Every structure is written in structure tokens, then in C-alpha cells.
Image (cartoon, rainbow, N blue to C red; front, top):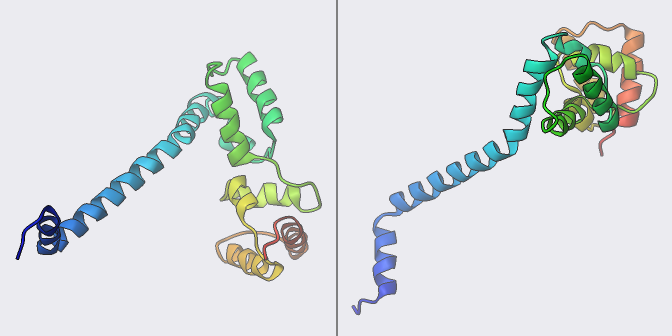
Length: 171
């Protein structure tokens, strides 16, 4: 057999497929962790600001039920800073973006207030806004939530179902 650089490399790879597979797996895992860490950095910073500045005066529930857009959250944050909240000017856009993303606006309509009151007891609004389902799937979801402890009247349940099916309809 004539040895070339190609055959040496091929033989080394064949001789150690376990090492090659392990190397590939470790590389993929480390790249995934690095990517995830980089993407969560602004959210982690915003959560720290929220926990250290906002919840020192009031609990999270007041924030969870606002459902505001960027401009409205910006006004709220500015107002809180004027009242003494310790948020640097550089951190305001990060905090406001996080608030809009996590506790952002919901469509107007019958059922919105019930969603704000009931669903946000366990879920942030981002989860509600990103969940699209058929009306049948919403029925299943709401039934599952009742099994988890959601206390809601039949009338309010129907109102919420109509609201979710209209505004967060999947295929």
C-alpha cells in the first residue's frame, strides 16, 4: 500500500471512530452552551435589574398584569426612576425590552382581563402570546389548566376560550 497524507488521515479516523464521535459531540455541546449563554445575557441582566430595582417597592404581580408595549413600559420605568428606582440610563433599554417581551401587550377584547388575572398567576405573557392553537387545542389547554388548579367560572372559561381562539389561533 502506498502511504499518502490522505491515507494516514483516513486510517487515523477509522482507527478511532469513538474519539472522533466524542470530539464532535463535545464540540456541538460546547457551541450550544456558548450560543445559549450569549443569547440569555440580556435577559439575565434585565431580570437582575427587575429584581433589584422594581421588586424592592412592589411585588412582581403588578408587573405581570400590565400587558404594555415598549413605549408604555418606557414611561412606567421613567416614572419609577423619578420616584427613586435605581436603574441607570444605560440599563433602561435592556429593562424595557425585557418587560415588553415578557409582559408585553395582548390584543383588546372580552377575555383579556381574565387572561391577565388568571393565566399570569402561573405564566408570563410571553408564553401566552407565543402559544397558537386551534380552538379544540385551546379547550384541551384550558382543561389541563383546570386540572392544575385554575379556578374559573364556566362563563369566564368560555370568554377566555373565545378570546384565545380568536387572537392566538393556530393552523
